[in-house]
Length: 285
Figure 1 (tube, rainbow, N blue to C red):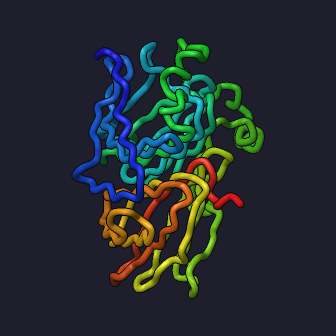
Figure 2 (figure 1 turned 120 degrees about the vertical axis):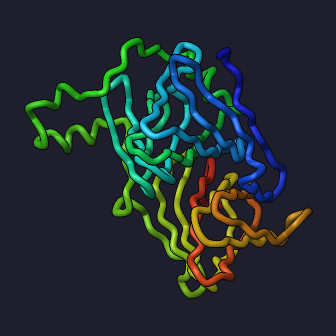
């Protein structure tokens, strides 16, 4: 299959992105394998998509599609078990539902579905492809001819070498105990855990308790979110179009940098969403 750029849906104001209207794209070729992409947003600041693999499926790289980019990435597992490998170093990391893989620019990566359940992974990528950080950048990097999936240098020295291996690792699994927590809301009814926060990208998971709102907020970058459970409402008082939105699991939402917005849960169960903000999470003074 000849190389085609993935679509880049963009928005100029706060916009809901219903699951039914998400842009679909088939990525890959015979050498890489094929990945089912659902591209929610791809602005000049952030890229959000959900990619899928069948049980025991995989993606790798090819000359046309080298998988090493000039961006920070967080891969959050929505379903299944995800194996993320660096074919250059031999690292293999495993993340289950609710966990994430984090890596920075210049990290080669392959992906594997390691269970009998279809794999779905929510991906955040910044700086985004529109800035030249994807295929054009990848083709400028030294090509990995032979993929390895084993750290032979650690055999015979494990777990004694685990701290040293983690220090040199190009990828990291972020689990519940690794999150950076913060409380929001007048009565602390909104809980956020950050998976990663760099100078390019911040990704976290927020729980809005039933009957609670968040405090009004602004970010120094574009924000994209994905609802994982419950019903989330978003109020954007200064939006030129609609100002009140209702989101369900699988729906997304885009908020431009500097736009005031507030999250509400009017229902009887927690509303949970994963979000990415790029480049700056905090509103810059």
